[in-house]
Image 1 (cartoon, rainbow, N blue to C red):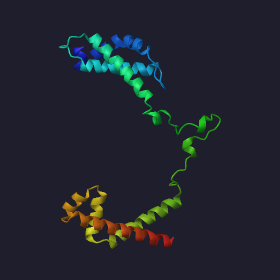
Image 2: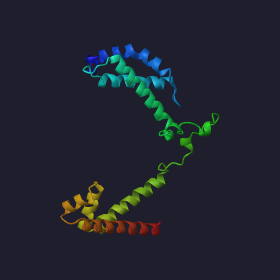
Image 3: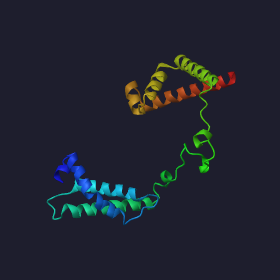
Image 4: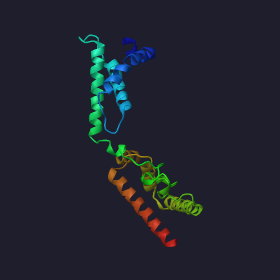
Length: 196
């Protein structure tokens, strides 16, 4: 047991093999909603691992008694967790790779039925590239030095306080510069909409 706790994989494997039958017996006494017996056995093995990790030989108990307690508690905790419906969204998910409503005769999956972004269309790719180039040009020529630097720092993920320190001004000045950038971007987009 000491070797297993100290990282000896062979000792841990031997200990797990020794107690696997006990874990199976303990797990067979319980039922978990939405799961099967293997789930409870896995929980029991987690309890066994925790027993190896937490057992203290200076206490007046045997490892077997301590392991039984840890295994039982882990299994009961798993059952309580399963009945709380905390993970109901995960347990009742709909796979994108399965057919809608379990229709086995259909080749269309949920993922196929969802609308995609339409990025594969070459016309959209060209227009998006032109729009981005136009915006970059407008920002490059239409922003003041402070606005340009504030935007660069903002895009790098700095906080307003960090930006103010780097630019040598207060946070209100940074906020005002970013608000002007936002207005210029919106004005550029509105102008481009008229052209399209």
